[in-house]
Structures are given as C-alpha cells and as structure tokens.
Length: 235
Image (cartoon, rainbow, N blue to C red; front, side, top):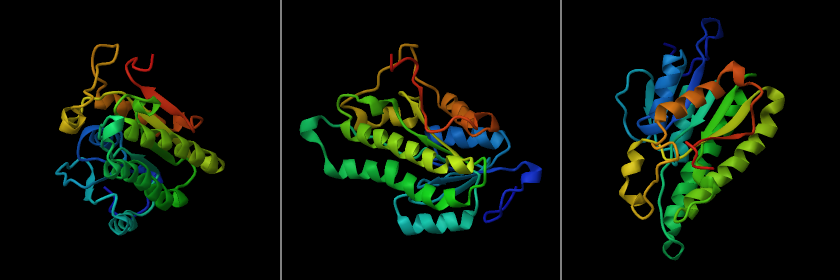
C-alpha cells in the first residue's frame, strides 16, 4: 500500500480516496467498500479506528489547523467523500444556536475546507461526493439539520460547475434513515426515524455502493446532482 504523502500510482491502478467519518456508520461502509474495490483509502475521523482495511487518521474536522496538517501529510488524492456528520433535533420553539452552528460547521465548513485543499491537485477524472440527506427537503423538528443539508446541495452544484472543465465531478448522495449508530442517538428522541415505504431502513452498504459508482469512470457524465437513496421516503 502506498504511504501517506505519495501520489497515486496510476500504472498500478491505485487511486487514492479520502473518506471522512470513516470510523462508523455510512463513512465506514464507504471506506470499506472502496478499499475492497482497490482504492488506497485514507479515513478521517475524530474517533480512533482500529480498522486495518484502510489507513485511519484521527483528526477533528472542525479544527482548521489540525485538518490542514492531516491533509498536508496525505498529499494528492483522486477522490473526496465527506460522510462525517451528526443530527440534532428540536422544535421551532426550542432551537439551540450552538447545535445549529455545530451542524453547519461539520456539514458545510468542514466540507468546504476539505474540497478547497484537495480539489486543486485532483487530476482529470477526480471525484467529490458529499453525503447529504433526504431531510434537506424538510422534516418537522429538524430545521437546522435540514438547512445544513440543503446548503450542501447548492454548494456541491456550484463546485460541479466550477470543476467540470477539469473533468472533476461533484455530487450529493442523500439517504433516508439508514441503519447506523445514529438511529439510536438520544438526541433524535424528539423526532424518531420512520421506516421508508420499502419497510426497512436503508443499509449503509447500499449508500456505499451508490457512492462507489459515482466515483467510477462510468459516472463521468454525472455531476451537480443530488441522488436520493431513500427507500421511497420522498414519494
């Protein structure tokens, strides 16, 4: 496996992907899927991971200096997947400004910091995927989270327009309630998740599969899109 700081060896087919939130949930499923597909994966998470299928780097994505140092060690990449995030729920009369700011910082601020550092050195065929949410369309009790995820779509579409001439695609994968540790988060007790019409929650591996396709050469003509994987929740 290539060491941190080296460029991808294209002749060996070793493309490098940076995946955030890789210690659990959707981020971990994506990191494992890409590693199994032959990617050289670097996972970023504030929680230490003992996973040996990919290289794990422990870093607080909201700490600008720490993130800059981690990215400098990683070097050039072929793909960025930003899956790190969390949800806080509250009715309109109980909104917490600190919660809103924290969600904005991880979903929007960290994504922007990552892309602004990694995109300039991506070569033609580079890929950026942001993990959004069906909640961006609006769900009672989740207005601050929905606002951050909705902003993510506008940001991604703007990047897609800017990077298209370089052959770099940018898309948002937007799952509905997914089988991850977040489903049991006490902070979501006010608005518990509902199963989609398919009768079960989305599986993290299904989100990973869609993400892997968007990172593939076959997806070169797909950019600036929000793609729902919601089990019919948007119907």
